[in-house]
Length: 105
Ligand code: FES
Image (cartoon, rainbow, N blue to C red; front, side, top):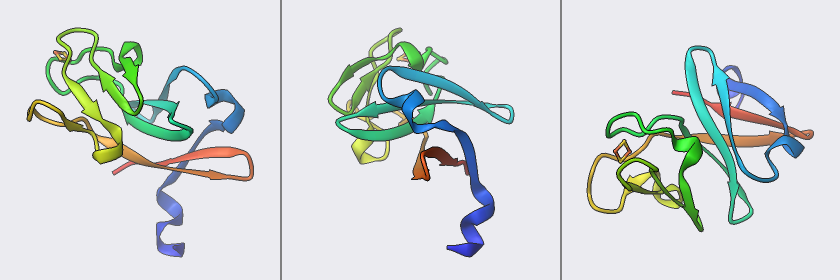
């Protein structure tokens, strides 16, 4: 794990992500953090189709639907798209001492 220590980026206190969708800036990248089905997920803030704002996605369990053309991404399966289109990038989330960390690739 020590070789991975450098890649974890702190995004805020865990209480901040208890409900709703939250876009955080990590360097030049924007990532949405959301607690769905009791678990924190992190995914690109922009849809891989034509950049729909995923912070406004509809939520059904751990499936998020883009507000523009309804591509649906299953966060429990790596962000794959349910119709077979391109999936959304997801990121590992870790909670440590009340703080949320993301691992960007
Ligand atoms: S921009 Fe997301 S489905 Fe079209």
